[in-house]
Structure formats: structure tokens, C-alpha cells
Length: 356
Image 1: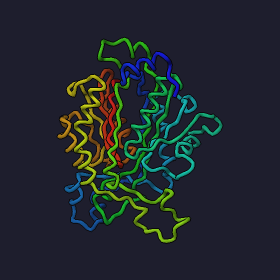
Image 2: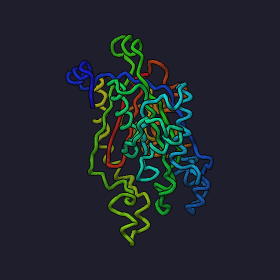
Image 3: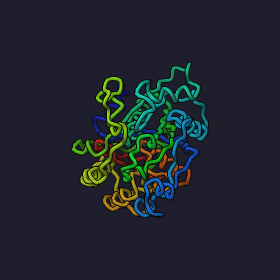
């Protein structure tokens, strides 16, 4: 990627320059059908109240046949574009950040592009995949392109339909995963905002870091759909290969070992202290994961955006949905410092620090 000479020098000198991005608009789409904990109890053959007690989930959305990933993502995108006060053809790039795409080819971002009426626009659209951290990876790409002057605005879209791949013989995953979509419009921070504040209060992306610890690669697996297990070639595919498999304890063990030091490195790269963070926007992995994360990285309950009980784990859509919630409820006011953080299959850990 080409970078202007002054930005290249700054990156060479300081590996984490503040990238002058801002959130111009956010949006979400929730499927029409809601599955509540009582219905989950019934499906699992559990006593009434067991799902709520075990997993602290009240309800989650389930996409209908007409609510495809691209349809939901486009609907969330329109909300975000309206919030930004722009039309779809005023963005310079559409990035798809999906846990699992609508189909292997073409990129789901291209399908969203068409849903937004951009078929003849030539505006580039492609996917960036890092399962639950796909939004973080797309945020990284978008921020660098905006800072480099290659684009003015980027539309990031996420949508996941976990319900199609749940194995109901394994309640740990089947009970908690929800469907939905979210979108974010990113633009360049005006010079007066980016450079006009006192030292240490500059707006923009202060730091973004991702680390992968592939010792945990077997903890979260969806085997079918790629080139290794393919129904066109293999007649004897086991039905289980098309279902999501998760060992939550194994995933937690890897993440728990890495998360505190990861956060310390992220904060150090931004030159900020933990007590300077105003709001934490985590991946909504599970109620227990949110509890453990708060304890491991030392944030109070009121600092953390927790929408798990009413949304469940929405895979890649989780972080941008929580971000939308923070924006629309006033928790991300101008000058506030937000920490976006999460884990994904792999096992990967990711975090970003944004001052709005």
C-alpha cells in the first residue's frame, strides 16, 4: 500500500501514529423472528428457565429465508448511510466483514454492493475475513487507506446467520448464537479535530493490534464449505462437518492466557493508561466470557457495553452491533476514548483504541 512520505516517516519513527479517522454513521438490522430462552429450553428438552440461568440469555434473533446475509447487511448499511447523511455512491470502498459469507464466490461484499444499487458504480467491494474479528481487520484496512489518502469514506458491513450451522446436540453453542447485521461508515477526521486538541487528546484511531495463537485452532471449527471438504467431490461428507463445533473451555484457556499482556501491549503502543479508557466495546462471546474478560483486564461493569442477553453471540456482527449501541446511547460522546476488543477462532485476539 502506498503511503505519503510524511506518513511513512511517522510510521517508521512511531509504529502507532494516530490515524485521522472518525465514525460518521452506524446502523444495525435485526431479523424479524426472535427466539426467547423459553423456546430454547423447549427445543433442548430442558426445564423452564434453565437456558436463562445457564447462559444468561433472554432472546436472540433468527434470520428468515428472505433475510440473507447480503440483504441484512444492505439494510444495516442504509441505516448507517442515513446516519452519516450520505448516499451509497458517496463511499469509495465497501468492505465485507463476515464471520461466514453468504457463499464462497463472489465476495459477499459484492452482493451487498448490488443490493445498494451500486452495480454500475465501479466502487470496489471485497471481503476481509477473521471470523469474530472480521470487523477489526476491516477497520484496520479502512483506517490505513483513509490515512494514506487513497479513499475518503469506507462502508464496512457485517452480517452473520449462525442459526444455519448450529448443532443442537451441543447446547453450549446452539443456545447463544444470534443472527443479525451491522454497518459503519468511516471517514477522515477534519484537520481541526485531528490536530487541534491538546497533546494526548487527539481524535482518531490511536492503535489497533491483532495477534494469533494457533495452538487454539481446533477450539472453534466449521469444516465444510471450503476446498478440503466439498460435496461436489466427496460423497460421504458427515453432516456434522457442516455444523459449527466449539470447545468453549479450550478457547477460553488460550484467550485468558494471552489477553492481559495483549492489552498491556495495545495500551503501550497508544501511549495511554487503562484508567483513561471511557468505554469498552467487546465481542459478545458469552455472558461468562464477558465476566471473565472484565476480571482479567480490570474494567468495571458500567464501563463495558454488554448487550449479550438480548443479542447473543453474533460472530463478526457482534462488535459493530455493540459499537452502534454505544454510539446511539451516548456512550461514545466527543472526546471519549473507546476500547474495542475481542477474540476469534484461530485463536486470535484483537483490540483497537479510538478517540471520538
